[in-house]
Each structure stands twice: as C-alpha cells, then as structure tokens.
Image (cartoon, rainbow, N blue to C red; front, side, top):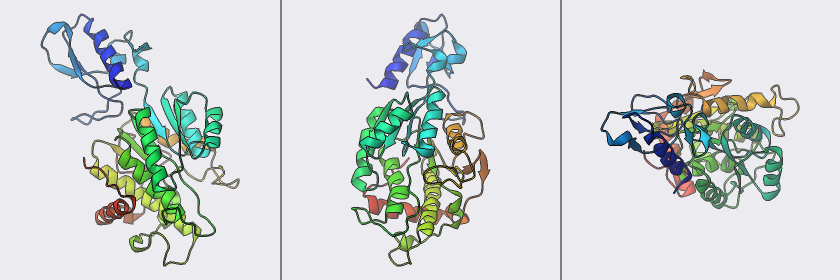
Length: 336
C-alpha cells in the first residue's frame, strides 16, 4: 500500500474509535476543494464512525483531535508535506531543501551525479532521499522522473535546476542548445512525467523581462550567439511554462518565482542578496495556506505578485510553446 494511503487508513481507524457520528474525508496538503479552500491534511478516502450515516465533512485532524496519532505521529505532524526540489545539491536549491526540512517536511533532493549527491547528503542532514541524474539530456530527464516518482506522492515540486549563460554555444547529446535543454526542456519533461502535485514552482529570473519569444529559433541556430540572451530567453520560457501549466491544470497551483540576484556560484560574489532570501518565497508558496500563497499563474518575488514579461501572458504563444516542447521531448503535457 502506498505510504500516504497507509497513513490515511491508520488515521481512519483511529478516528473510527472516537465517539462521534462523523464522516471524515482527508485531503492532500495544498489540494483545493470545490469551494477553493486549501487542505492542511493528507490522504484519501472517507470513513464513518460507528456505522452511523452522517454528513461528510473535511477536517484538519490536528485541529479536530489534537491528541490523535497518525502512523506514530501526532496529528499536527501528519500534515507534513512531501516535496521534491530539483537542482538542490548547492546554492538556492540546497537552501530551499534545508529550509523545508527545518520546517518539518519530507524532502527529496536532486543532484547531477554521485559526487554532488554525497555533497547534498552531507550538507543537508535529514533529506528523505536523493535522486541522481543529469537532466541535460532527454533520456536523463526521463530517468530522473522515473527515479523520483516512487519516492513520494509529492505535495509540491520546485523546479530549481538550471545553468547560467555560457560564453560559447554548446549542444546536448540530443542536439539541443544546453541552456534551453537544462533550464526549460528538463522542467517540462519532469512536469509531464512526475505524478501531478498540488503545487508547482518554476524558478525564473528578473532577466526574464529581457527574454525574447523566438519560437522559430529557440536554439540560437540562426541568431548570433549571446549567452546572456540565451539565459534570459530560458527564464522567460520558464514563466510561460508556469502560466501554461496553471491554465491546463486548474487543480494545481503553478507559479514562477524570481529569487533575486543571490550570492551563489551562479550568481557570483557581486550579487546583492543573501542565500536565505533566494529560497524564502518558494518555501512559502509550497507550504503556506496564506491566501497570497494559494494563487496560480503568477510571477512572484519576495512574496510580491509582480507583472512578468508581457509576452508570457499570450495564450496563443503558450499553446504553441507547449506544442513545440512536446515535439522536442516526445511527451505531451497530460490533460486535466
């Protein structure tokens, strides 16, 4: 039995012993119901106490029965989220994973190779597991999705993996320009192949405002190579992807986050912002029930809802982009 459903059955058995003719329906953390309310509990299914028919209600177990134990955990602990953070062996991704673990959540991290996986385990004690794989190729991204999927029924996935602008144009084994392959194609493939979570975050950059929508030349095959423009374009397309997923998956909160110019290996020593600032907004988005955090199809920085590159809101462009990615990756975004 899957880990989450087993936990739910244990909760149901515990709840059934309570002297209340109440039917309890458990929902997964972050999943919105028909009234737009967001659950803080986990699980699936319905149970009725004492065999008595009654109105079914959704409850937060931690609030209803503070002493209830679920799978050996106190009820308030049962709402812990299961999260996947890609590109989390260092920098913003590592800080994000550390902050989520410190918040009591179950976190799976991702590293490009075994050496970086060991670095992640040592730097972030308490990780639930590490997925290893280079998402710079289609086969690698697919392998990461296959490895990550059975490790958790994820409440949220944070697509943090990325590379900076390169001095020279480089291509992957699949023949795609590397910046685009890692920053855009990989998150798309993972989105398509990992079971749909309640929340998605795509890391972008303030440079998305300078991104250009060249659907006919995504790989800089005709344009003169410009590493910074290639990076800016990739971050623009990340916003387009976040917005498109938000439209196609209304039951999932999908947003793009600009972490700021952070002092990391990629950001460099001249960057203006400290590492914790670069992780704070995405941690808040995937764990908070604040109405400002339970939004979708938005572009945020420092918890502020900002206006993205105007082209990112073009619905026709979004659809054409999804079609292009589908053709490149050989996998289409699943329908709602």
